[in-house]
Image (tube, rainbow over all chains, first blue to last red; front, top):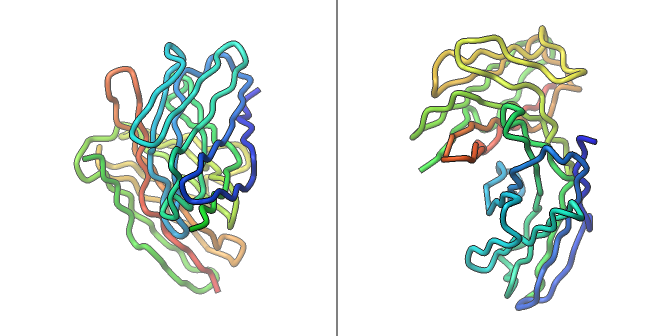
Length: 113
Length: 117
């Protein structure tokens, strides 16, 4: 019940295309859903996050779509660029749980020029 | 803002020695810090949750006597890998939690690559 399932494991997109990464969770107590971007040999960087009281959040080229009833959320990267090539992790946490993040398995994105 | 540093960025040590890794929140106070371990091409595995002034809470399967955590101040937590062995070689990452309204945003350090020979 604590798991967050992320798909796909890897993704190849052409420059200018849309990258879509999906996550699903079971625990209805989760109330904060961040996405992290990680480059090789570096720590994850917070990209964008959402709470379940909204269905969508957009920051620049990055959009989170949230479906509370389906317990799913996804990251959309519009106009994907080669510099977006990285590993993306979704995560979830419950405010009541000391902020402990439960991470998805990660998606390696490659954007081809 | 919200910068977390780690030191050292990479360390190579001999089997049986101890290694200390520092994690600092540079521009905010973090009541809670977390320590993760990451294997190549894998997700982050939470090792322990560290609160300032109290004992760390370790995840199941993580040996607290092997991975000593000290959270001495609101900006500093340390992880000491005691009597390191080659199987402890990994990428260790810390994070610090900053309260921002309703959200407890978590910011990660750049990681420490530990190689035990």
